[in-house]
Image (cartoon, rainbow, N blue to C red; front, side, top):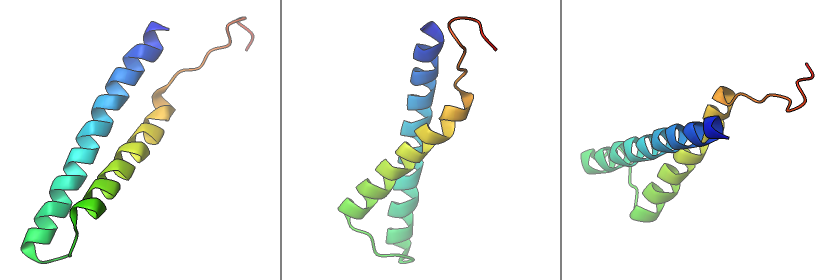
Length: 70
């Protein structure tokens, strides 16, 4: 269980970082005039980026059979 908690903390941190990076990129693109994005679009896109980050991090989660069967 400790491994799952460690994975959750690290995956959550990476998801927050990814969401923040996405939001900053969209804000910068909006200011530069490359795209037109309102706050709802930025929030939804950053949130989805965080979800994708969590899903991507599932590959790092080690799953073992509790009975030791391989």
